Image (cartoon, helix red, strand yellow):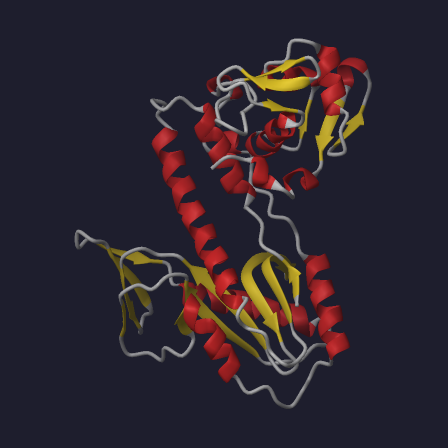
Amino acid sequence: MIYKTRVMPRLIIGQNALLKRLPVNHEKYEKIQSDFYNGKAGFGGEKEFDYQLREFIPPYPHAILHDLFLKQDHAYFQIDSILITPSIIILFEIKNIAGKLHIKQNPTQFIRESANGQRTVLKSPLAELERKKYFFANWLQQRNIDIPLIEFVVFAYQNELTIENMASSNIAFSYEIPNKLRALEIQNDILTSEQIHRLANELKSAHREYEPVPLTAKYNLTMKELTSGVACPNCNLLSMRWESKKWRCKACDHQDLVAHLTALQEWYCIEGTQLTNQQFRQFSNIHSRHIAKRLLANPYTQLSGKKRYAIYHLSPKLLSNPTNLSF
């Protein structure tokens, strides 16, 4: 049973919004575009893993959680996916790396070779996963849960892979994972079905939404450098205008009632979790403070203060359904 699904990372949503609003000749455009494509590829690899995992339907009670961000011993760590079974817990680190991969031991090295023969030494996902396994074991120990942990580094798509001087049993491609999981021996049950259920729910409750720094700070940008407007969900241009109680696109004539929610999603990821009526008007090209006030009175905002001291606080639930965002 899946207790936690995977959603589009806020960082990717924000980078996509920046690329829509930043002039293509801006000095930061190529850097943001590269980061966006890399992040989007990584997320695509994780979704490919999720798709392959759907084939795994075991006869025993189990729990699956995707994209957990936890805190233990003053350290934060993120786990791409977790499978809880009665006798073991499996941690997955998922990678989407293009090109040929050479993996060596002592010291462990992951070397990517591109199509033109250029070789790049990458940070070892095995070392990353070992760190996460350490903190997760401590997290379980504090809750008096003693159960073996095993781990897999998973490559989303099939690469040309060379492994030297090391065991490869914990390295696999996504399509191999269902067979590898079916081959595991589940014996000496440690957790009952009810205990698995409680642990999965506790992990879901302990999950902390990753809050990236505002992207204006990350990329040293100001809001004045970005194009204002509300994006059309049909043509993706910043050409929506509020007319007669609805949004109308000046480019393709598409009409929408809630396009401003996408603008608020983008503000959340670009600039932060709060804004004023004036900031919303400037960002969305609304001229009337009264119209802005009505649009800001939605389930995803909470008002504090009055008149010129009024501030609207944006809920993380605003990002729970980012399908409105055009990629």
